[in-house]
Each structure stands twice: as structure tokens, then as C-alpha cells.
Length: 429
Image (cartoon, rainbow, N blue to C red):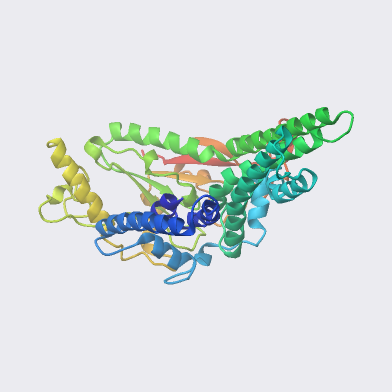
């Protein structure tokens, strides 16, 4: 957790607090504090050195992230949207289904087990040893439950919420749900009823089956309803490669309102020797916030300008020399990019018009056709032809629960789609 918090995402450190308390059961307080400070100091120093090298100035990025998103210094995370307090509960139920209430019920289940099956001190019987083992499992379960509870509580207090912020606690929630289900099944099996063992086993199997069915249905819904951007961009990659072979000029692929679904530049092919023969740009849409920007920067004078992106006469490719020289040039290019701050970036999510390109300069365009949109319907323009199209689930026009979970045959009547397409500018004859 320390590595994840300092090297990755600092908020993950919240999950380590209950675990640190758990260590006090087997280690003295002094040892926990000393070892914790030593590990945090060593990791923090490495992060500080790496950030300083990459940014060219003394920088500690975890602290910057907390200052911006929590303290509101230099900006505010609420600029990127806010959600109600129950947002994570609703998303947790959708993605985890019965696992979430089972996990939430774990303290209650543990409490009932402690009441009905207390451990008896001084009793060395098998039953007592079994109860002692269960007590230990209960204590560990609480240590697992607390990180998830603390995480959801702290994240719910923040106005800006995103579904992906729940991902770090999914493992803890599923473990808590499994312990809760198994413990409840054991309790039912231990009752004096005639068919108690069968009832406990059926309860366990039914719980696993219900969770599996809803999970598969949710996964199938995500794949069938929202995978079209990956399919369209895979086709875009193939088209750009074909154009690079047929025409030596740069190809410009544009995005409008679908800018936030751009997967990554891994779907945009490079030309020979790393030359950038394709470029992704933005056209104006109804979105009025800040769009992403490319890295900028100039390399030191001992690297030729022909191989420095952004400099006059740049070719955006590496000189074909020995492997060491290529590695050195690559490192210089990276450092030149990360150490140069863009003058058009701001921390207040304000629109920057220099990001936009006129749609007439675009060779390709990725877009989604909505029934109600303020942007032009490019797919209906005679200047464009549809190269590839896939269906994208329209949540606003589809009905619950069929827009959330995939139900074969019956659910298809209540699921409406929009075309998600790749357009190419027609060649003027």
C-alpha cells in the first residue's frame, strides 16, 4: 500500500491505515512506527528524485495531487463535475450487486457468530479450538472491512466523484462478501433444524450463483453496449496504416464531442523510424472545458534539431545510429517534453481555443450520431463517407434495468443505440 500510495495514487494510503492498526496485534507500536517511517522515507525520496529529474525542478507529485484535489490549492476538483453523496453506493450495487450488501453486513454477521458461538477459554476441545480459529478469522475480516469502509466514507465526502475511484476497494469488498456469505451459511448449517445442513449449502450456492449471474450480465452489457469505441479506433488504426503506405503526407484524425473516449495514441500508428505520420486533433463541440494538450519542449543543443520535436525542421524521428545513441536521444526527447510546461494549460478547466482545428483540415473524424446534439451531423454531410460504424448504447433513451444489465432477447426491445462511426473525407475529383 505504501508503494501504491507514494508511487501511484496517494489516496490509496487510506487503505493502509486500518492495516497498520492490525499490525499492532503482532508488533509493538514503536516497531510499526519506525518501520513505517523508514519505508515511507525511502519510497518518498525515490519519488522526489524521479519527479525532480523528470520535471527539471524540485517536485513531489503526490503532495501536488493532494493539494489540488483536496485542499483546492491552485484549482479545484469540483471543476470537473460533482455527484451526490450516494453516488458510490449506487455504482457499487450496480457493479458488485449482492456482494456490496453482503460486505456491509459483515460486522452484523460477525457479531451474531460471537453471540451464538463464543469461544470458551480453558477448553482445549476441538470445538473450542474451532471457535478460536473463527474468532481470529472474524478479527481479520474486520481489518479487511475497515479499509473499504474508510475509503468509501472519505471518498463520499469529496464532491467530485468518479466510478473508477471505487476500483481500489473492490478486492476488499469481495473478500468481505465471501466471508459474510460463508459465515451465514455455516450458521444456518449449525442450527438444530432437520434440514439445516442442506439449507446452509443451498444458501451458499444460491448466493454465489446470484452474484455470478448478475456479474456476467453486467459484463456482457458493458461489452455489447460500450465497446464500439475500441472497435472504431482499431479500424482507424488500420485505415491510417493503409493511408501511410499510399500517401506520404500526414493524416489528421479529428475528435469532437467524443474526445473523452479517445483510448490512447497506441491506436495511432507511427511511420517509419518513429516518424509521426498521423496526428489527433480536436474540433469545436458543445464541451466548453479544457481539452488535453500534447507535450512540448526543445532538446539541448547537443542533440540535432532534426530529431527534436517542436523545433524548426523537426522530422519527429530518431537518427538511425547505434542503439546507445538512439537510447540517449530518446531520453533527451522525453526529458525535454516533461520539463517544458505548456503555456496554454491552466488549472481551472478553462477552455483553450488554440486546441481546436477547423474541421475542413481533418482527413478522418470519429464521432457518435445523437438524436439531439448541437454539433453538426457530419455523417450526413456529403463531404464525408462512413468507413466503419458500430452501435453504442444510448443510456438516455434505454430503460432500466435493461440498460444496466444484459438480458438476452427480452432486453433488446428496451435498449436503443446510436451509431458510433469513423468518417473519411471524400476525395475531390
